[in-house]
Length: 126
Image 1 (cartoon, rainbow, N blue to C red):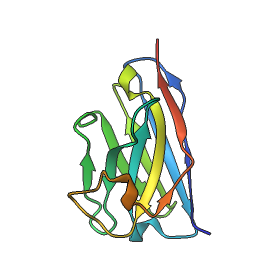
Image 2 (image 1 turned 135 degrees about the vertical axis):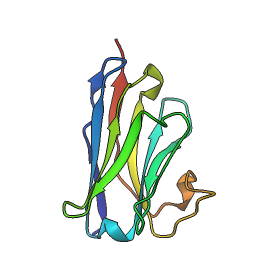
Image 3 (image 1 turned 120 degrees about the vertical axis):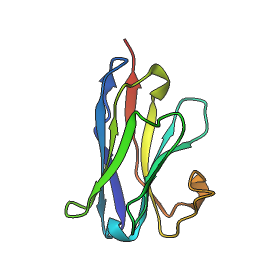
C-alpha cells in the first residue's frame, strides 16, 4: 500500500526554523516527483516546492524562495523541507504529495497528484 507520512510540524516563533519530513512506504520515491503543499485556514491548498524524480532539480513558490529548501534521501525513502526565517504567514497544514508525471507549467495544481499524506501543522507565532 502506497503511503506518505509527514512529521516535524510544531509551534515556532517568527524567524525560527523547522524541518519537515515525509516518509514514503509502498513505493520508491526516486521514481516520483515529490512536492510539498500547504493550506492555511480559509485558503486554497498551494504548492510550496517540488523535487523532480530523475534529475532531483527543484522548484519553489516565490513566497518561500531563499527561505525553504527541499531535499530527499533515497536510502531512507524520505523527502524533507527545511524552513528557515519563518513568517507568521507560513502558518498552515503542510502536505507531502507525489506525482508520477511532471509538468513544469502545472506543478502547483493539486489535482494532478497521485498520492497525499495526512499533513502536519506548522504554526508561526510569537
